[in-house]
Length: 344
Image 1: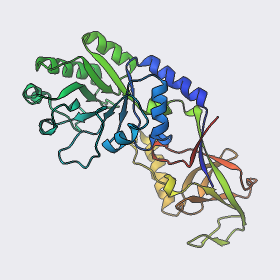
Image 2: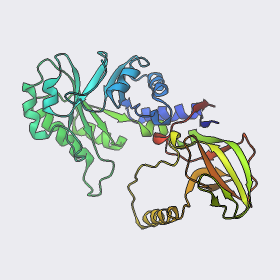
Image 3: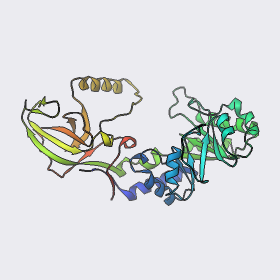
Image 4: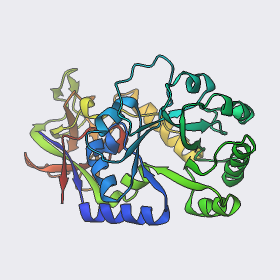
């Protein structure tokens, strides 16, 4: 009873190398569930790429990664006064996003200072930068960080926003040698390098690096049981009636794996909105499409997913799989926990 992620390892690594070729100062990101691949594997791949710095999400992830990764570690979540964090080795660099937190860190702490951007999430405002030289005594500043938006419906220029921030850092008499950025394209970085020749820009990349070649990764679920079902026959926890003749398929993968759980999405355009409304309407009558497929046909959930398995309805016009066969499924890797990753 296994939910598997099959990995075409050579193809996956070829993609990693292509991303590294595009982004000369790449900082790989390994956080959360490791993009479905686990952080320990991603740390090993980062070392294989020859990177000297790995970004992680939280202090707890840094404490774990320090056992696997021989280089430096950058914690992306900003340091907060009074946080519950484990002891961290010296190789760990903390992100700091407000002046009070900077002042509270012990002497010798290694930090990356995050500046506020149009994301408006967290960061030190550019107007506050002139105050920093007075509070940085005893701290080792490894650089500054800019977390930029993915989309720009106002057609603003990300390069100009980043360059303006670098100018503000320099005007405050702070070091501009190393800047960590997110969500800039290779073309943007080339323009930015021309605009700020005295600065090295490091791109923090996770999704594009690990999941950018979707053909290198394939999720599959084991068929555990196949039960014939007649139209009108009752089944399952809630004893619903079968809509037609067919089969019930019990397959691996349930809520404990992230199956059936969905993060909110930002929807663009009329057609995606119409599809969302249609899905919501079907859900009110207990009709929900599953991520599982068989013979190129996406299957419906017969009932909501259980903790470790899902029950699907297969119509009578399709020959059922055998127990032990595997069904392909389309899942969001960042919210899915696989039982195993199989290298091919």
